[in-house]
Image (tube, rainbow, N blue to C red):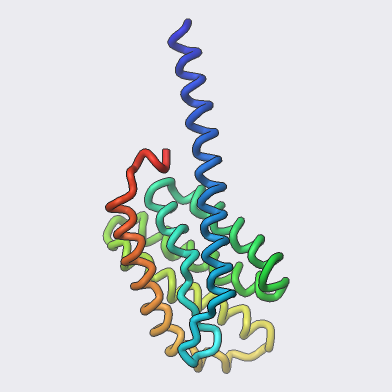
Length: 178
């Protein structure tokens, strides 16, 4: 009987640890969002940013699984929206992050793409999701003329985030995410 109670205690500790790690990673993603608000990356193209918070989402996807990664993503978007960008900023970010996450999850699940490839696709998909909301808000598809520029910025930011995620995945102990 002791073995069963030991197993139950280990399961509870593991579940509590995963919830705590999820909270820490959501806070880290929020900090990265705040850094981008405080020190905006201005390449001269409106709406372009590095997407540092996605580094945390990619790490969580690979180390904790899609449910935790999606939860971290949603927590970050909602809190960042409430604190930094307001309702409309949250709406744009939510659209971009959900489309991005779905694309990253599909590519991750195939097992045929590197971390950098998954991140690049996520960067492009994020921009596409935001552009969909913008086009709907102003009732014109004319905004999609801007999409080729956003593809290049999504690829560039995806490479940067993907390289960072790859380095961290290689160096962080797996036990950190249990």
